Image (cartoon, rainbow, N blue to C red; front, top):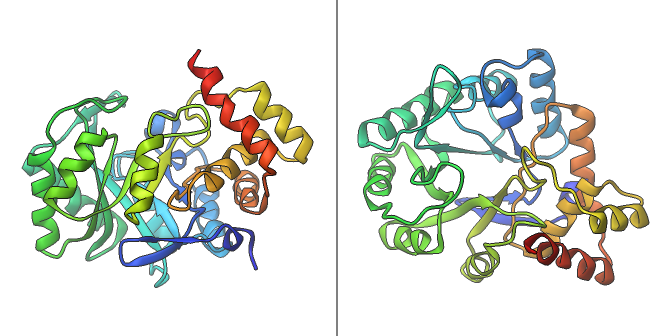
Length: 292
C-alpha cells in the first residue's frame, strides 16, 4: 500500500480520489508566470506524482498562462481513467504578470474552451469558478451571473462538475441553489482557519473542501509549536502541517505543489504520518496564537 492510499479517499464529482493530490501552480515560472526554469524537470514531477498514485491534479489555464496545462498534457496525455484534473476559471494575466478579473460570459466561455484545448480534453472533470470580487481573499457579492454561465456550459456537456473558489459561506449557499457544487477551494491551513465552520458543514453534506496554500503559500507557515511537534515526530514542519489537515476532516483534499521530485516525495510521505492526540491539541492552538 502506498503512503497516499493510507490517507483514504473522498468523492470528487463522479470520481473517488485519494486525499493527497498535487497542485500544478508551481510548475510555471516565478510569480506563476512564464515557462519553468527546467521544462524536463517539470514534466518529470508530473509523471512521478501519477506513478506514485496521485489521481487528483489541480491546475488552471491562467497559470503561466497556459503553461501548466500544456505541461500536464505533454507529460500525462492520454490520461489514466482514474485521474481527476480540476481547473479554475475567471482570471487572466496581464503582460506584466498581474491577475485580472475575467468573469464576463464571454471570458468564462473562452476560458473553458482554452482549458479543454490545452489539456487535450473533450470535457473538463471539475471547473472551479474562482470569485474575483476579491483578488486576494473572499469578498461578499453575488456570484449568480458568472456561475449561471458555468452551469450552462455544464448543460452543453463541456463541464462535468462545478466547484467554487475564493468564496464566502454566503456565496457557497447561493451557489448551491444554482447548481450542484462538488468542491470548495479556499485559503485554509493550520494557522488560517476562518473556514472552520464551512469545512464541517461541507463534510456533513459530502462536499470536498480543498485548501489552497496548505503550507502557507508565498509566506510559508512559521510556528515554534509546529516546529516542536515536527522535531518530536521526526518529520518536517510541512509534513506535520499536511498531516494535520488530513486529520482535520475527512472531506479535505490536499493539493500541495512543488517543482521538485524530492519535495514531492516529502509531501506524499505526510499521508503516513500519524499525529498523536496531544500533538493535534498543540497544533490546534497555532490558529489562536496567529490571531493574537
